[in-house]
Amino acid sequence: MTGMEAKNEGDIQSTSPVSFGSNGPELEDKTKKPYRELLALSRVSAAVSGLWDLDGVLDVALDTVLEIMNGTIGGILLIDEQTQTLSYRVHRGLSDKYAEEMRLSIGEGIAGRVAQSGKAVLLEDISADPRAAWRDLISTEGLKAFISVPLRAKDAVLGVLNVASHSPHHFTQDDMHLLHTIGDQVGVAIEEAELYDQLRKERENYRQLARYMLIAQEAERGRVARELHDETSQSLTGLSLNMEALLSIANTSDFGDAAFKSKLEKAYNISLQLNSEINKIMKSLRPTALDSLGLSPAIRQIAENRLQSLGINVSVKHEGMEERFPSEVEFGLYRIAQGSIANIALHSQAKNALVILRCNSDELTMQIEDDGKGFDASRPIEVDESGRGRGLFSMKERASLLGGTCDIRSQPGKGTKIMVKVPVYWSKPNEKDRSADS
Ligand SMILES: Nc1ncnc2c1ncn2[C@@H]1O[C@H](COP(=O)(O)OP(=O)(O)O)[C@@H](O)[C@H]1O
Ligand SMILES: [Mg+2]
Image (cartoon, rainbow, N blue to C red; front, side, top):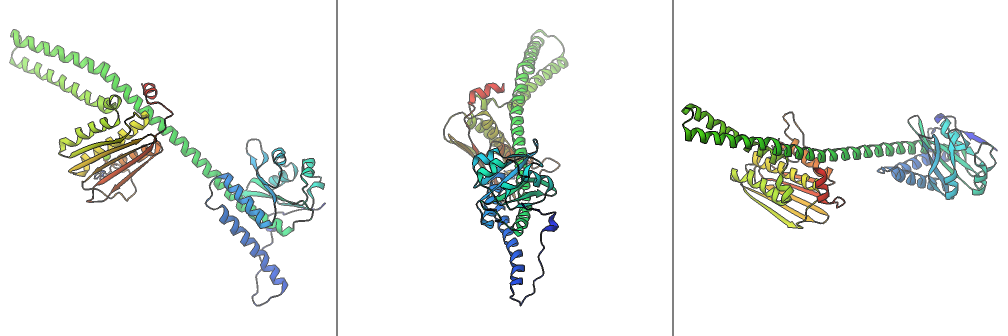
């Protein structure tokens, strides 16, 4: 049987210059081929463009190739990098048994040779070709005429595209050359899909890691807050009590002069002040209101504490379910609210602020708005050297790590509105989750 191999890309006939004005059959032949090739390439390119998942690319590429070839039998085999074997990823007109059993090492059989050499092969009858592997499978399947072309990206072969027919002598050399060209295009699409897939996986890993770090950060903050409470704050309370006793002894027993008493009183006041500062730090590290009361009351507490003293009217509303939510969701929304409220306090010069939490069983939304001076939120967020922008950036990042969105709307003179939407997954019950934190 005859087997023809395209030696290299140069083997594919190039388009000849066309002289207009002649209608001879020769010209028709000369123009038909490049047209067919261009048409085929643009069809494959249109079909696979915008597809980013590998299986989608392979399915569409194979269907388009079979349509162009007017054929019904074909398949795409990809190389497994680890085992260095080829196996079918998609196929049409072949039995599942054939596609499952046809596994070839690089260099084995027809497709294996094509993968090894990077050169296309045209066979008049594969069932009678001594180079073919799995000949019994091939004859059971009734395959005769056969074209096998490499799928290349840059210089690497990623797989092989086969088309076949039940009758011998079915394909021409032009068909092989056309498929060879299409193969290069499909190879690039496969490489892009694989890169995209890799990028998607890496992004997913990063998200998992960042999510884990946020949970770990909250747990660590909780641990430090507890330590401050159990050790530092307790000792300071003891110190204050002792100083208070000393002061009262000094005042009642005429012990020490006025300067001594004044110094003692000063030291006592410092110990009280230290205790109140430590309390503030403990609260910001681990918002106890969030643990004990839940999201809305905790947000109400920070909003009122932070904004009312600045003369900003603030109202916090809760609509829907009053359930507790998974702790990463509650902490995420709490920290976003904390950042937004700090921004209202620091930058807005607003008169009024409004926080609305809407909770249902599968989604939590939070809207935080003010009627202050606003800013241009249409510009992409940039974190500058002073850290400005980090607040808004981390709000978006927190929402996205929870699988949600954070939309920041603001214009100069028109106030600011932050809309956060987060899906709720109930796989982790809140209580269990909470105790795992501690
Ligand atoms: N509610 C708001 N009203 C007016 N301007 C705001 C508001 N929120 C944010 N901004 C503007 O956006 C900038 C970035 O905010 P952010 O990322 O939180 O950083 P920072 O608060 O550290 O400046 C602020 O410096 C401010 O100019
Ligand atoms: Mg800020």
